[in-house]
Image (cartoon, rainbow, N blue to C red; front, side):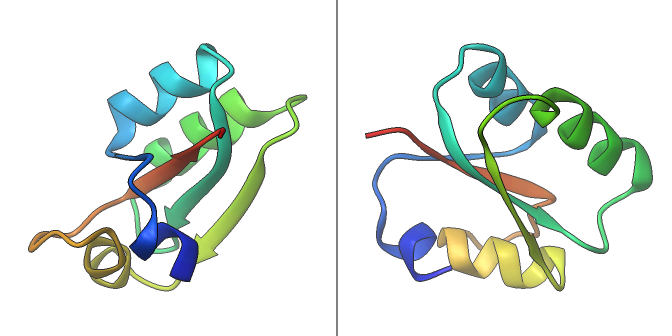
Length: 81
């Protein structure tokens, strides 16, 4: 998660993450274990068959903090360099 904290090339949120996955511009996806099942399922479905690393984070609160925001985050991603 250190890469997520320090990176300027990150996307936070479901819609932006899915859009970036479809555009094949995502390197790593972070997803919170306590996110709602439909959110997790949609991320896993989009990543299937693609060379994208998926990192599971304990809580949405921890993921939000790692992203440097004051609210919970269900998912985030790092863009390819």
